[in-house]
Length: 71
Image (cartoon, rainbow, N blue to C red; front, top):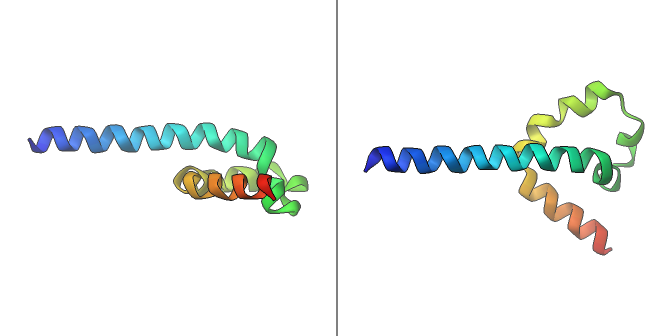
């Protein structure tokens, strides 16, 4: 039982990370400048620096992007 729960949590976390990585590439190419216009001219190091936060917080950022697209 405990092993099954651990497997489900591991799969869910892995899925969250994979979706976060895919969202990161979309976010950097198309949407980050809608939230913060200064990022468009930012160096590559800064874009790599926001990778972990984007992966962790992709559901929140997706809501912000959708909200900005509607406005």
